[in-house]
Length: 169
Image 1 (cartoon, rainbow, N blue to C red):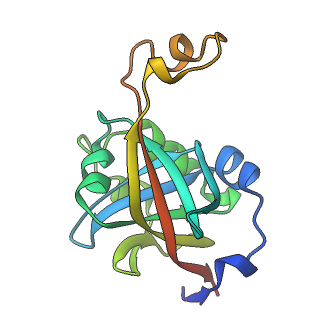
Image 2: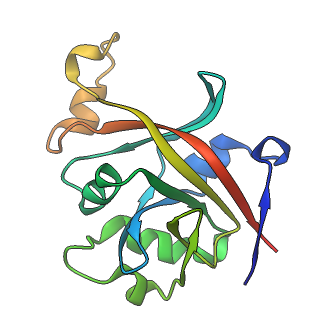
């Protein structure tokens, strides 16, 4: 499979569907040492006059160290035929298995970061800013901390510039 570099501003994407329903793989590291995880929380938009992706990763996730330790990472979006691969990557840790081998996905380097040949859209993201979510930041009393953080740590948010975008040819 080949990819074609595009201007992300000319790509028609519904972020609610792409992130929240279809999910994405966040991948960090390099071609000899990478890890990926499924994410269904995030935003696409504009901040500081830059096109950005904001994603959220818990510090206990294996992928956290890969994203934290690098300057760039990728967000890969797939067709429905890869739902089982994304489900696997979201329910298994790279500490315990080789997700690439288990899912049959094919790593490819785009923009200096690992992505997957089977993706329909790949965003190469350069980290700009990070912050940790915390209970004291919630402004409403609708149970979010208890529902999402009762047994797991709060996420670190990464606001990242979309420096390159690729679509499958």
